[in-house]
Image (cartoon, rainbow, N blue to C red):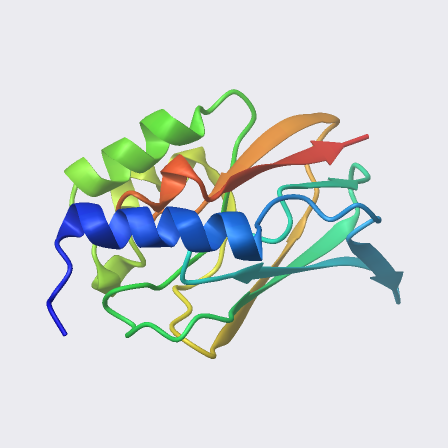
Length: 162
């Protein structure tokens, strides 16, 4: 079997994404138990989060659980969730993370950019699950993003606090 070039591999991922889907669940993705709002997000080999929007309340304890349901090797296709402070553009942030030394060693989140972050998970490789818990900030709209190189183009979402 002939090796696919980068363009061919990206085209196959786009085709698979159209078949497997990504995007927002139609029901409320937040479950609340014992005073904690939990959101279970999956990331896949087509570079999609299954949840691209959720709503929590100011001051509420929030737990984001990220599961990488993909099968590609860890150094090829890992994912994280980085919740950004209000007003931080996920595209600019993710581009800066790559340019300023993002790597596996720092979860593609350079120390100098962490001031723009509310919370973040570690990188999850295939069949791995990671989580982070934090207190929801004041009411507003906050972006979240995967900072693995180039994933931000499709792996991003919105946390609404109201």
